[in-house]
Image (cartoon, rainbow, N blue to C red; front, side, top):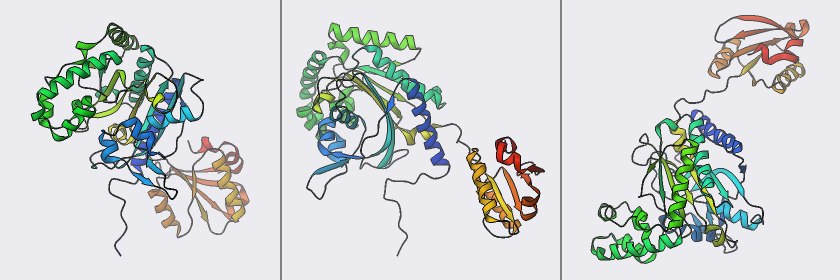
Length: 415
């Protein structure tokens, strides 16, 4: 029988890759906390309607990429492909729509059956933030500022660019939608098959098409800016003003759109040229109608998500592997005393391992491979005298340390 391999599009997080992953998540969690965001965790699978409602049946995610299945009770369940819909569902089902605003940070695995490529997997991980219950442009600016602060704390803000757009309010979108339908209908024979379907169901989705013929048509399509109502234009102007106050640079990119009706006003993406053609590392927008689709009241909301794997790839320096103190028994010291010493060091916050068996030379070799910072030799004589020999693995220097010092101030010994 051949060895069992990971399922296509999945991967193991081990060693440096795990340390990079942890750095991204822990940094984002810390920065989100500074901005007043609390962490929520939602189930990995949900009622399929949570995502079919929120993502739309014309989206590629729903029509082609979701991992959906019927459980033993005949209910249709789906492994979550994204986090926003689940957070909105949690807001409603936990009765929190009367306790607004809610500022939520989340992290965890997501699942999409798409073609694996650099930094993109079928099981991938995201960090995300949702600010629910605030309708002001300042909320949008703060959400974007949080995303930028995370990138800055990770040391990668210098080579990402914020691209920004507006979708206007509902009246603006309706007028724009009519203009798009008229324009694309006049060029229907040049549209791809997928875009012909979108023209009837969701014409804004044509603007996301990757088909070369569609892209040529999109380049000359009516622009949203032409259809902004005075109120929508004011919101757009205030958002950019607030970003200026936060000191966040941006470029306007009219091609950043969201096809579903509950999206409005702000859309944005942080992009880089260091990951090939798929350059978006963090993206979001305002989605004032989504909570109502989940059965709740009208709740304004703004949020974003970012792929942990892609952010991890952008880290300039890999986090260093932790270093341990390796305790090596010499001869046959009393086991109880060895175990007590091990635990005493660990309780003081010293990462401590034990060299289990083998010759002293072999155990020293293993300590080197474990990236040990120090070796602590413990034998019958040492226990009797209450003095232990410590060797620094980098310097090669040895010194004697009293039991009392190890039991009370070990961190200074192994600093």
